[in-house]
Length: 216
Image (tube, rainbow, N blue to C red; front, side, top):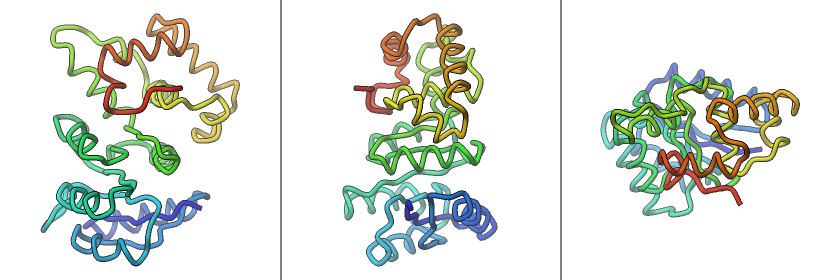
């Protein structure tokens, strides 16, 4: 069971996310906070395995809260949850040391995927955030990743994390056959033949680089 500290200043959002995580299986929200200050106070007493942090909050705010949490607890596994899925913020926070960045528009199932991957010690970007990072680095050029659907980008991110077919099947709640179908569809759309070529393409478009660790 993955124990989570949920930080969001909107009570309705907190309640909805808490209910979803507690009923999804494998996760349990052990504490909730409505501000960065409250999160700092709770951290030592609840010792969560993952912190799910809203970035847009009054007072200290999520960015400063992440900075202070990581300074005080350098091994903390923090996932930022934000309405901002483009611009410099995702990369800045990842460089700061957070383990994940999820757009609030991502599917609920992808939130679970991100939590599971971060709990395993890996980094995770929601597919739409990862896409915009990849699309923004080649001005005037169409990035091949633009051809992919949301689900196909999820598959790409998991492949880059080194996830096996079984891993992907479990976190995406799809059959191994369906995962393989998506995988080869990705290969076809991107013009690659295997995971090694996919990794090279991801490096070229900075979809891998400092964002996730390359597969072994």
